[in-house]
Image 1 (spheres, rainbow, N blue to C red):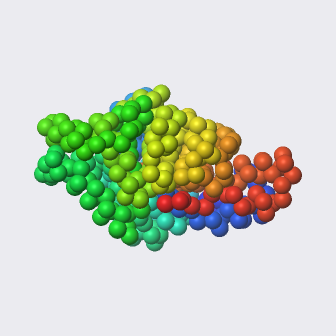
Image 2: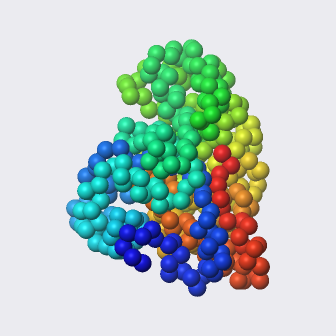
Image 3: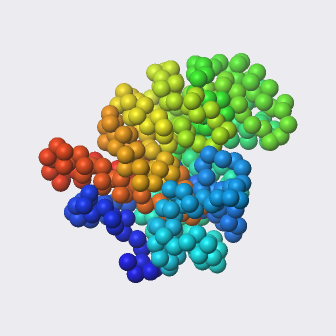
Length: 378
């Protein structure tokens, strides 16, 4: 492949993905239903490498580099040609070229190469470092929508003077405003980080909510919502407002107790929640449980996007396992990208997995093309 050309994601897997299927997938433009913005300011190498380490909140140790990891290799394989470099160029050479480009140009190249038709942007994490949904559209020419973080909304209301007594109604009013906005397509909870899923998911009354809000408001700022009562309140009120709800599940940094983010712990919530789309994010290593929930509840959908990035060559097995029991239409696509990185491994999985099934079952090629993920229910 000539240096500077956009990479063909099916290079190296032509034996697993016939050309007709590869051609079909090359033309599919996905909805990235969970993504963060691109960097808006230059970052140093340490910051960049930290951004491709999902588990640790510490700086990358001096004896190692995150470029020598499954995701680091993927960046050097698929992003290097976008910068005019050979695939698998060395980490130092990659960084030397990348650091010469301004953030807008980097974002334009990387986001343009990702083949995304719409970005659904979560602005609730380090929003001062990354672009807004409008900024994502400006550099990629693809439209963007936004996701409202429930915990951040509650914290903002209390930090800006909403009294605990007025909090329940103020929260509902903010959700109603979001539901009426054409730019906001859903909400998100990070209960996995703030409590865990092993909590009482019963919809609380306003008296209990006011008491919990008063306790939270009395703490030093910035506030960090970690009340099971307020978590359950936010999720139930978002559903009552008719807003889809994204739920971080499983794989994340060490602030969460991974063993208590199994989505099966959400069963009490799913059985009683007002039926709106529930979108389980990431899900690894609980992707099979998520697939079961997607089969069991008509309103539950899920993705494995974050883990696809981190598992490297094993990502094809991950996608296959995620679809063990799930209806094909229930698995969504997301990158969870933070900063301007184009993740193209998913397209390889979308080709290799269904073709393996087709080969084993004798299905026709047209049957294989039908279920390949193309977007998001949001």
